[in-house]
Length: 70
Image (cartoon, rainbow, N blue to C red; front, side, top):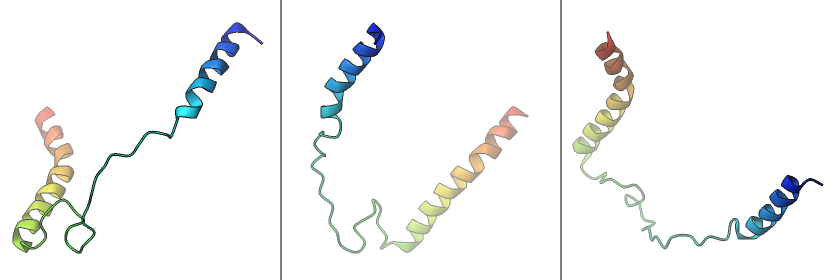
């Protein structure tokens, strides 16, 4: 066994036990209707404007970039 492979195996054996043992962040979400997404859904017109802006920005960005470079 070469020196490089022995060093790699030794390092991997030290790292492997610690993988997956990180503690999850302490986050609390209210599991009720209307509180599971990070936006207010009670104001429907404003929600529609936000959704339209999100999708138009995502779909229109490549076209705006292409127009800018022409």
